[in-house]
Length: 303
Image (cartoon, rainbow, N blue to C red; front, side):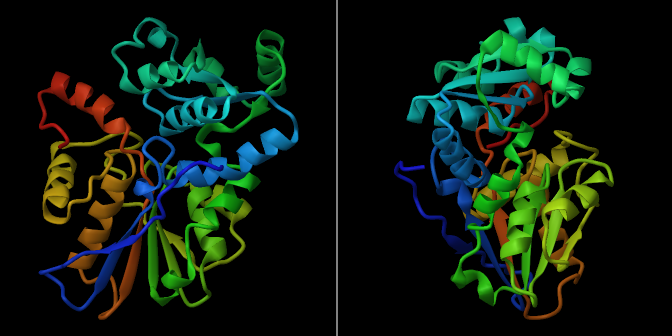
């Protein structure tokens, strides 16, 4: 994608409680204001492929606060593609104004199709796709979350030669695409740790479809109850982390990731003098939507 991006940088943390480890955060969130982190990586080669195929429309899927929906809408606006977002939840059709993610996507001229949760579960079926084609015409289809072979190729570019010094590479896991690319780009003597943001054992199988190396492991203790589930303890950690290090975290992925890494550090999980790289995959656009939900619950807000 030929637009101005900022190179990600490794920001090292000053860990007063544990000076025997080097911990750095790779700031992929700084790549672009709207198409940042792993979304930039996943869309890079998919967009090139869409252009090669002569496609003028991008279609994809997502939920109400989806980082992927926001990124696809933004990239479409930036490069002149029409975009279609198939959104989980028919009840959202008249709630766009109150939803920061959908409101932003609409401002980028994304066209929505709201479907029931039951229909959404069948979104990759041949019948569903054919119905979309009859309704919207020809399009380039990008999977929910963006994960496919081209996305993996993009995510393999997250690590650079500078990162070869790290013993551990930690990242959050959603659909498994980002960690698969990182695994493929990692060195045999490095250990890649994935922190799933949702419950379930299916991710092991999904990652194995794309990952070429076996130097990885999933840490499944920090999903906080499942996808998009949070509590005041996590919110407090995120706000304190931002205060201490100047790094904002999102509540769906990177908040849980850093909570897990810091907790493991405090418990002595990592051998002494370990060098640990944590991948910040972006997703900060979802904070405003989550704060609207937190207001209803009368919980602390994410700063």
